[in-house]
Image (cartoon, rainbow, N blue to C red; front, top):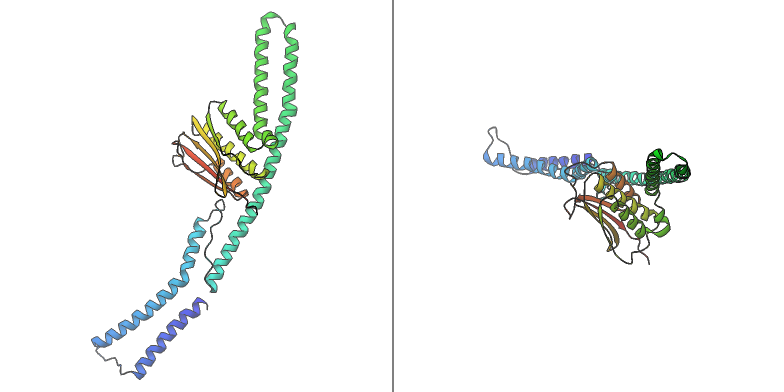
Length: 315
């Protein structure tokens, strides 16, 4: 029954009960209200107010929860729903809201998948152009300088050697950028080797990376492996660039029905700062594969990143 008719029914029944009591019972109201009459009127008023309060409270409580959920809902943290046990108009509103959130999460997951796929394709294209065009051009420059070196006067050979070293350093940097854009080792050798290469790369730039891996981890598929790799890459980048960390622990373990990637650093920590573009990007990737991302204080005194990836149950 709609709330409007329930309120009307409750008040109508109370009014009828009071009318019947005045008509059939020896109850009167004197010109000067007696104490017994005042008690009867007071209890009647209390009964009406109490019944209305209980009815409105039980009927409108889901609306209060709905308002609180609407104020705090975050599509990057999916799965929050209201119970749908109640019937009537409020129950229909709650079911409609839950269905709307479900559609929004599905649409967001689909759009994120398309956006991230386009992003990875663009990364691959840029990496290929860096390697094939700029890399080959710098290689040709180095070969030309090497052939030119015996022909130049002795007094400029030192400057020519500096130019060669600059070109060689630039070529190495271009290759590093191309490798970060397109993790070829992930496609060729798998997730463990890709994480090992990632740790080695950051260790070469002064960050001490400790790796902890559990043996016998199951196959995850290319999409989930790519998400784990990108989250680890972003977490290591944040630790080295923003947290000013010296040591990072990179662990990949199986925990019950899930695989957990843990990245702990000894840096400055979050220090009350809001989530930046990097963390939001990690949440978007986690949402894409149905994983959960948690960022907070870590065991080493800095920041801890936890990516929990559910494993498919095989029967």
